[in-house]
Length: 107
Image (cartoon, rainbow, N blue to C red; front, side, top):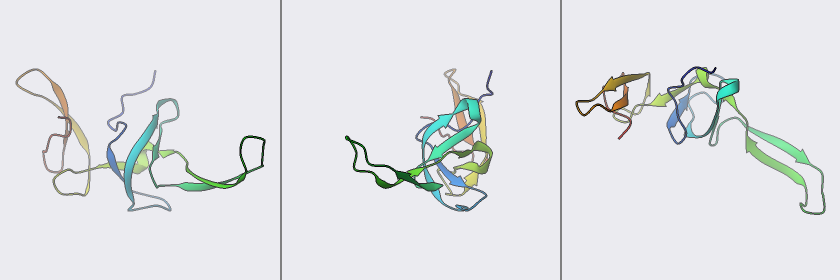
């Protein structure tokens, strides 16, 4: 069974290593079996497709997955990279919070 990821779909993340270091984007998909995420506008690759009856073909740009260890959540208060922790509120809800500023991420 896969481990629990602290990054979810639609989170704002920053890339920490690699060719796209420093870029920020929204998580489009989390690939749990491969420990990877697809981030909008990050790790864009060119795909050369042949023309078919339904598509004209050509060069298509799309985002490729990157390892989840290479991204960090963007702190909602300060805007930098932060680690994620869990906290149980008074009403019993378990929420994520940014360890850098203490700000609650899940609302």
